[in-house]
View 1 (cartoon, helix red, strand yellow):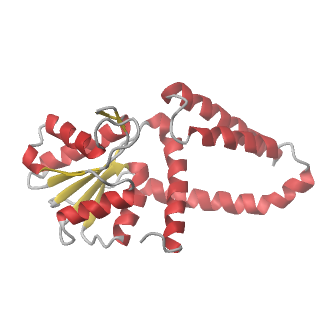
View 2 (view 1 turned 120 degrees about the vertical axis):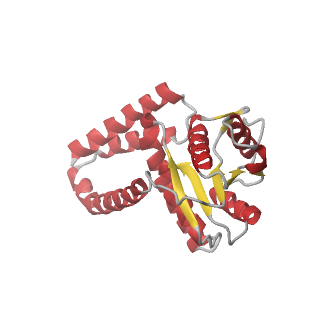
View 3 (view 1 turned 45 degrees about the horizontal axis):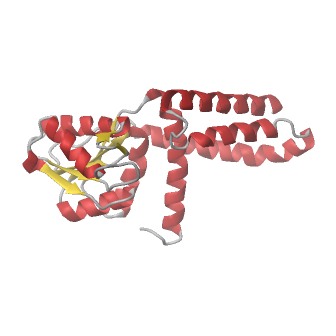
Length: 240
């Protein structure tokens, strides 16, 4: 078991180094890999009698984590239903006035669907956060316009600050009885669809945009914790 923990520690630390060299030290959730690498390395030097007591909780936790990750990955290639009334493009970070790489992938996927389904309208969804000169919704719609989507097909939802608010406020714009396609990166789509169902969106399908391959492990692990937090808050009644 010590060898497994030591190997896990080394892997996490090496991946942390890869993340900051590829995307910068301020990359969201990057610090987790440094902390986890340190944690596993520290566990690997504990006495055997202590480690024997940790085998069961570590084993159960790992099995549950893998189960949830497989469910997340299962949505990563989702195909949408054709002919939707609205395409909801979920917001992501905007660098000044330009979409981040993750957001640009969402916009490109949405543009392709909109061109194939000319009756559908797009809802750019997302407010304005730190380091953003415009709202995420405005960035989405401006980029879609540059990709050839006419302005009369573009709607803005500019006040949301979370996935739940993205979907709730977009549904208010489009109406509860309309059909929707939710566009987001594949790792995020499982939680987005679960949130949509909790909000009562009956006619909804997902369109999974691609993600940065180097950052996929970071995205998926971060999404696991985001999903657990969402479910915990739903269970205690803080959200739907």
